Length: 293
Image 1 (cartoon, rainbow, N blue to C red):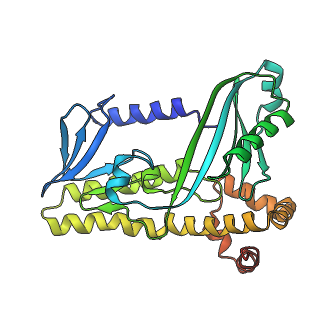
Image 2: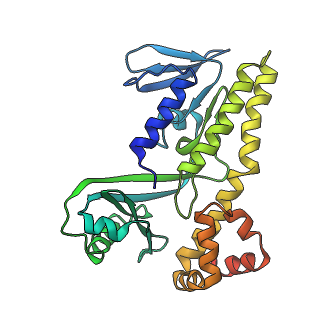
């Protein structure tokens, strides 16, 4: 399981090892462009100039607003970090739990992380009371209600609209800032890593371009690359979420079959993608039927 503090620090160290200059506690307040450069304006009044700027500051950040990213799906995630005694740690060792929730399109999870369990739920925004109740009932049902959470947090996840931009001139966005995540599971780390790699390659090519035409072509490759892989994957996720939200009983029954569970487990292990799975004839027919209101 990913421990965000460790994961983020590993990324920081890798960036420093690659020669990056790290400026902490320097929030970006605005972005402008002045011909040959994009300029990030910092809170202290200074600016950072670059031939290409990659925004990776989250879906509510400055770069998403500047680029004009639009979001077609917004969900509320609630999460607890619960320190548990050794017997409970042993009970959950090597196990995870996913629970298909009572709210259309919702689900819950338990991820063990050593001495701590990460327990959370997610559902469409606008169901705050029901989502909080779902988390409370889920924790109680697991017998974890007597433990005081070490951390209690909430966040919004935002999926881009199908035709949302990912670029404005010399500024491109990646990860959550571009609204790139899997719509059904709302998983975003793998999308952030993959889009970040594509954005970095495009920015490096653009920065080395001899003229504006070549730079424009290099940055255009980022948009094209997303359209080859991540965006079709998101479209497949949207179709699955629609079927799950509209006909949860049928969806649960399908996942409970040996084939259905093997398919889902294969996706979780990155052995298959929703795009490849939904391209099969039987899956297309099932999703078309289940996706109807």
